[in-house]
Length: 271
Image 1 (cartoon, rainbow, N blue to C red):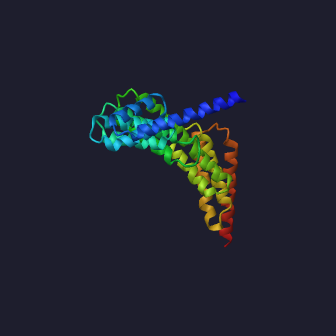
Image 2 (cartoon, rainbow, N blue to C red; image 1 turned 30 degrees about the vertical axis):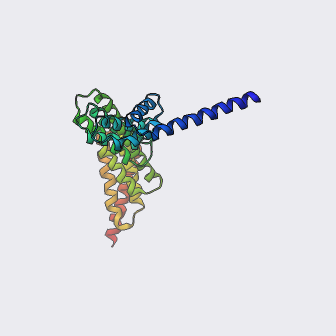
Image 3 (cartoon, one colour; image 1 turned 90 degrees about the vertical axis):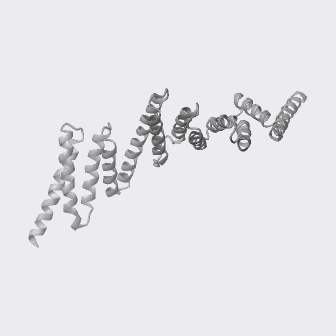
């Protein structure tokens, strides 16, 4: 018991000593000593304390040779603490301020990479993903010979895959909720945005299905136009996928739409 109390005392004492040392460094009027301490904390991977010192140093180093390095490592402190949106902001700020720096290329790449890291694995909000793609593509355009270009291209490929999945899930969600008009539009957006997707065949079939349900449940005056669209989508589908696994179901929707149109024509002739 006494042994554990002694160990606890040592741990508390070490923590207080560490805090006391850091406080003294923060209050040290010597900018160079604070700079050296910040770099030491950074090298020892204490990114939190390093970031506090770098942030405190920035106003004191404006116009000096050290300001560039401080701002660059300050951005990395946020990145290494997984504060990716802040890291992206500070890497971009660095690039805009020091575009001719030896670190400029890396900073612009890290802006895009930070945005990539900030994007969630999957959700329905596409804004962060699009922002990351734009930033990484901007980097590739500015530094086409960079050693980071291959990695950057791979990041864009992954992000576009994420966008593809999001677009697909949005359309499926509308369909599941029986919001057929929104589903048809969303499936169409998917076809436009991802023409080479491995999901395209399924999406084109689901568009026929959603359009048929939309027509079937529409008010009378809209049925004819909407059934005609089912036929139009079907003909495009079989032209592209003549041996599709969805062919039989698609034919059923086509035939049901033709029956619907015949009923409309019959009712019109009676009138």
